[in-house]
Structures are given as C-alpha cells and as structure tokens.
Image (cartoon, rainbow, N blue to C red):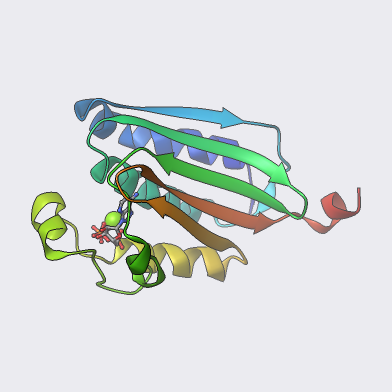
Length: 155
Ligand code: ATP
Ligand code: MG
C-alpha cells in the first residue's frame, strides 16, 4: 500500500507518549514533506514503536527527536535519544537475536533482546536499511532509510 510516513510516525508517537511522559521524556517531531512510499504501514508502525520503546526505555530523562527527511536516494527517519548509549564494541551485535548489552542492563531495564532483530528483518524485507550511531552516556540514534520511488529519483 502507498503510505504516508508522516502519519505513521505521528500514530506511533501517540502510542508511546504516555510511557515517555511518565519518565519525563518529551518526543519532538521535525519533518519535511516527503513522497508517499509503497510499504506495509502496519509493519513500519511496529518498527517505529519498537525503536521508540527502546529510546524511552534506555533514556532516564530528556528528549527524543524524530526526524523525517528526504536525502538524495532515500527517505530517512531518524530516532535520536539522549539516553545511556551503547558501548562501541557492542554495536556490531545489537541486531542479533537475544543479544542484550551487559547483564546489569537487563536487570535495570528489562527486555528480551528480540526487538532489534525483528526490526531489522522487517525493515530489510521492505527494501529498507537501518543504521545505528551511539555514544555511551550521550545518546543513540537509529536511522531508517527507504528507497525513493523511481519517479522521485529522476526528478
Ligand atoms: P525487547 O525484545 O523487549 O526489545 P531489548 O530492548 O533488550 O528487549 P533490543 O530492542 O533488541 O532488545 O535491543 C538490544 C539491546 O540494545 C538492548 O538490550 C539495549 O542494551 C541496547 N539498546 C537498544 N536500543 C537502545 C537505545 N536506544 N539506547 C541504548 N541502548 C539501546
Ligand atoms: Mg527493545
């Protein structure tokens, strides 16, 4: 189906807003107009909610920013938090099933370690990519990139 990413992002934020508010975290959306994309809207919502859930869970206070924009060949959605971050040596493994960063985190923050493995699968099935950047005690960002429809790319 042809989906409006902006709408899906707004619905996803709406669903986790209370969870964020309860932790004193605000979620800000910055966006530019982007073309509609041929994607499975329900799956994308599942992906976004998973990433937002992580951003909230692994942030103790502060701000989450969601940015939607058009870059040369892709539409990009970036979810950036100001949380505990991920150690650099862990970054290559976080998309593996059941991989969780350190035991103390599991105790403090819960979770099963399945979220990101599913997220990556769902994104790639739809022709997209996911990238992560993180700095310990500073924050983490996940960027989703979906190829632009052909007509958009030759404009
Ligand atoms: P769940 O299956 O409930 O999502 P989880 O959150 O532990 O469990 P993933 O979502 O797959 O599992 O994340 C894997 C690990 O990566 C987490 O345990 C956490 O340590 C780290 N992580 C993921 N997102 C973030 C984030 N935004 N900030 C800091 N660490 C993160
Ligand atoms: Mg998770």
